[in-house]
Image 1: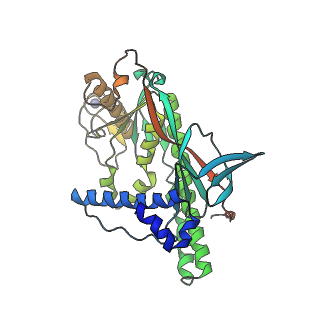
Image 2: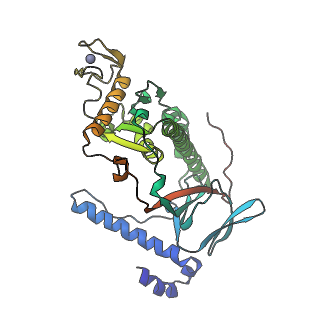
Image 3: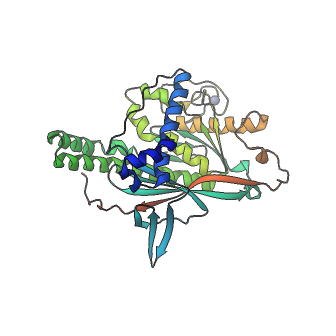
Length: 360
Ligand SMILES: [Zn+2]
C-alpha cells in the first residue's frame, strides 16, 4: 500500500495536503490490524472483519521519524507539524531523548493531545537495589479498591456509579433530539464530556495510589487477575468494569522496582496464619478461622496470602518475572539497554475550547 500511495497521489491531488509519513503510518496500522486479525482467527478466535472508520470515528494520526519539531517562543511552547504548521501547546513534561514518533489524538469530547515516543539509552548500572523487607501484597476488590498486607485499605471510588444519574440524563436528552441535528450533536458532545471526566477521575485516582505504593515499597505482589470471568456476574459486572484493576496493575508495573503477579488460587479461602481452608461467599466480609481463631477482614487475609505466595516464589526460586541481573547480587556488567518508552504526553489547545459545564 505504501508503494501505491505515490501513484494514488497523482490521481487524488488532495493527498498532497498530508505529510507523506503520516499517510504511510495509516497503511501500516491497517496492515498490522489485518495481521492480528488473521493470527487470532488462526488461533480459533471468532474474529469479524475490519470496519471502515468513519470521519467521526477516526481520531488519531501519527508522525513517524520526521515532520515534527518542538519549539519555544517566549513563554509559549509550539509543536510544529509538517503540512499543518505551528500549534500552541501546553507541554507538561521535559522531553528526555530523541523523539521518534508523535501521535496526535482528539478525544471524544474534542480535546487534542500529542503523545511523544522517545528513544532513551539507559545504563543497567542504574538498576535500583531491591529489599524484600519492603515487600507488600495487594488484594484488589470491589468494596475496597486495594487492601494491602500492611493493613491499609483504600475505598473503591466507583467513579462511574457516581455519575450514572448525569449520564442517563444526558442520554435521555440525546434521544429527545432529532437525528442529524446540531442540537443532537451538542447533546452527544456533552455526554462524551461526562464520560471523559469519569475516565480522567479514574486515571487520576489510579496514578496517585500506584505512585504511593511505588514510593513506599520495593516489591509489590498482586493476584493474577482473572476477573474477566467475574464480569459475567450480572450484579457485579458494572462495578468490576468501573474498578478497572487491570490498568492499575499496569501503572504499578512500570512504576515499581519489581512487580510480581502470583496465582490467585485460594487466596481468599486460606487462613493466612495457619493455612486452614475457610470457604466463604462474596457477601462474607470477615475471615474467621476456627482452627487458630484468627479474625480479620477477608481482603486483609487475602493480601497477606498474596504476600506469602509471592515471597515463597523467591524462596524456592522457581519461575519468576525477575530479570537475570536482579536475581543475584553480582557486579553487573556495563551494558547499554535501550528503552522505547512513551515519555511525554501534552495537551494541545483545540481550536474550539471546551465550554465550561456543570454536572448535577
Ligand atoms: Zn487459621
